[in-house]
Length: 337
Image 1: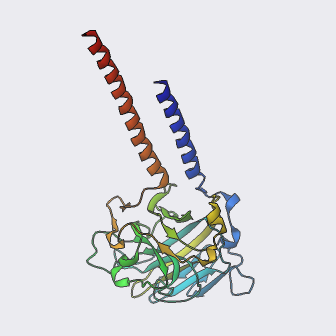
Image 2: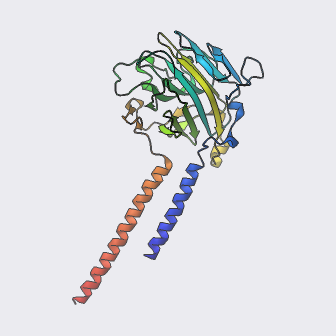
Image 3: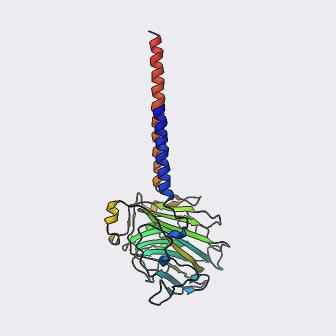
């Protein structure tokens, strides 16, 4: 049993190192890693149309001392704000504080906000105030249901989409054909702050929300096999149609994740990576469950490690028990001869 104890201790050490690696991948808003050139923070200095500005805006966007209002609670408005500095970080996490509110009740409001990491910026269009067939990543906070047949999910609904420029966003189906997953979230007309975090690290895209005033993140999407290049731009846009809402951005805080990469990843030209996702299943299978979590999300690395560790420990325990039982049977058989 001494060898078994040594194995258990070694497995525990490996588990600690694995957990440390995961925890080190979370910034928790560490100001030490805040990248101000990609952050939009009160009092919104560096916002404007001058050559030295780090953020530029378009359309109905109104910049005040307390918020950046992409659209007011009026019909047929579009607005956006874009970081003019390309992001060259391989691993990053964006925290967005936002507020969606208006006079509309029940389902009489729309359309929503989209957050972007794309090759091009300031290109108005039909996708929540930005162009269709974009190249990069979109995170959509959709507040209005268009697809009356898709009653398996509630709105507002938050989803993510990666495109290489060849994919259209289907408003009629609420973007289902191209989404990577999503979750429902009650984010309208809240008296408290609402937050959304987008993390991209080592090919894994994770989306988290904090909309219940509990000061804790709830996972919305976690999917691996995502390829995003460096050198793209962050932005936010919103749109209203026949229905409307105030769509406000309070802050966008960008954090650098301190993650080690393999030598092969280090020498790769990340500016030439084509946005893509290696899906394990069809996007149309993405279904939001009653708890608000995305069903069928791939297991994270440390969860897989825990499962494998438990399986291995189970095999070892069975082997040890079997050996002890076999030895006792041998000793008993000897006494009969």
